[in-house]
Amino acid sequence: MTSVSQRRQGHSGQGASFQSGPFTWCGVGVSVQGTSHVRSGQTCQDAQFWEVWREDTLVAAVADGAGSAPLAEVGAAVAANAAVAAFLSKWGLSKWGLSKEGVPPNDKKLLSQLRYSMKAAQRAVKKEAAAREVPVSELATTLILVVATPELVAAAQVGDGAAVVDDGKGEITNVTVPRWGEYINETTFLNSRGALKKAQVNVCRGTPKHVAVLSDGLQMLALKMPEGTPHRPFFAPLFKFVSEVTDSVEAHRQLELFLRSQRVADSTGDDLTLLLFSLA
Image 1 (tube, rainbow, N blue to C red):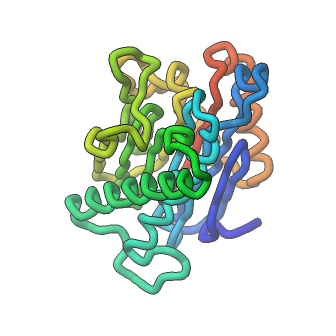
Image 2 (tube, rainbow, N blue to C red):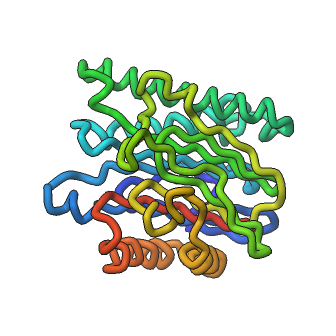
């Protein structure tokens, strides 16, 4: 079993890690092709990426490529990777860095760093589009970036999907909520005009026990609409699951089975991404 301090990456259902110890983030993440994409022959356009630094600092991203964009899966993968890398490199948190500063203790600095990381992801998508000599709209994607420590959970989000935190005492709350346009199926993409000005950037202080990050395919099942608050019957069993499973292969298999279940398929045909983390 690999250490959670190594880089974690998941596309189309890959990525899981577990490790015991004080203040250790343990997690599993799965992305699966939606049933409508299976029927149409489209690939999974969701992407996920995360890293746990010094065992107690989690940095994770979920991106959902626009269904109408020809290179949506590329944009999603580039954005998710770049956002995590930018946050880690800015503060020297990566395994290659030497800084002991850690996540900024000041909320203003932390929020600034989240915005910086979203901007870096936006630049990375533009650079990828330029390299491919295509309009950046062909790589359109949403993006959620989450940072969690034993003292806080912070997130930045452009578009739909959500980040959710559980305090382990019965309180499951939003860090971010889906954001739509005039209609529920409208959303803002990372390279839309003014996207970063519209981004949600929030910090929740306290001791988190569990964190979940999901793409919009799960919204109608996981959140109470239209307010977007967490649906406890959805999250409570999943948080219990991630707290108890210690085998990474089995954890991945079980979560993938859940995302491919008839219950989920009946609620959506979209691609699905779910990251679950527990602070041991």
